[in-house]
Amino acid sequence: MGREERKIQILKAAVRVFFQQGFERARIEEIAGAAGIGKGTVYEYFPSKQQLFDETMLFAANIFIQEMKESMDGAETIKDKIIAFARYQTSFIHKHSPVLKILCSSQVKAREMGAAILQQNARLTQLWREVLQKAKAEKELKEGLNEELAAAVIIGTINQYCNKSVIFQQENPETILYEEVADMIFHGINGTSR
Image (cartoon, rainbow, N blue to C red):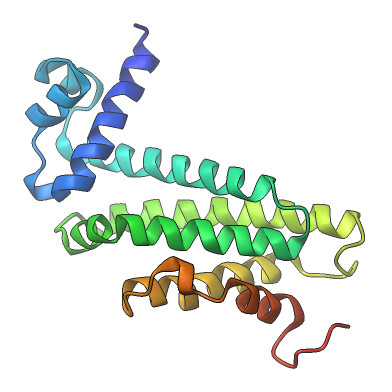
């Protein structure tokens, strides 16, 4: 097995262990066991548990973005892409909410978690900018649309409304009115289609 393949094997095992145990309770020995390697091999790739955690969070964010993109690829219209995005993200949050709570309550340095979240948000914004640019080129959206602002509206609305509903109100993702959310984003609060 090559060096990069081994690193990915360790990161995949670390995702499972960190997501189940949180940072404090996870042990390098357990991650090594889950990867089917020795503890010393983990340290050849990651000199500290903190560095392994940081890279694991970035690795998990990359998987999230890739799966998000795949969920949107099958949708044809911009409205359908918004719905696909909202469904995927809320389902992900619902499925992993206990894990996310462990990670958020963990005493991991806020700076590192913040950096991973900022990087994920930047990649998500870029993904949406590309989707919106394509929709503009295909005349589905108006020519002068500010893609950065539109991406912020889409991401912000989904984060605020859908994720809040799942995390704090314990709603099942299937009960969220995705069509209504997409209409609100697509047509605005005055409800007209210009």
